[in-house]
Length: 116
Image (cartoon, rainbow, N blue to C red; front, side, top):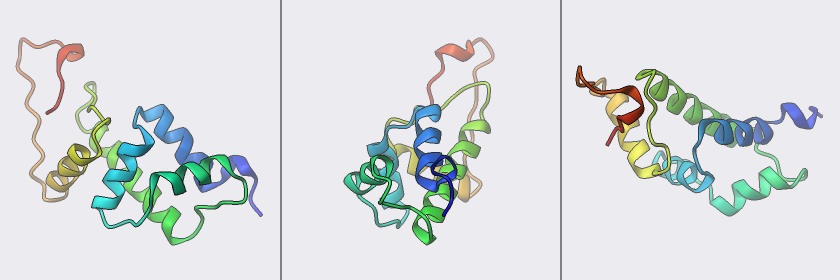
């Protein structure tokens, strides 16, 4: 058995908190991506040592989170608003189709720009 610190659910919980994506937004994005999971199931995995996200489900969730991080890093130093799972999923679809383009006006400050 793996130490709890290295578990998929603990890594994902920490990543979502560090990345600023609410669990419900991530679940919405995951469900749109075809991953069958509920917010209550994810919260249970985060809070209960007996509930595990190991296996295919955990791999798919971590892969999705990796895509979201990659998308967000692609526009650094700016950051996407990750609070709307449906919008994040739409951005992912555009990136997957190589159509995600983010243009920063030359006179804009990084702190004031929000991707919509």
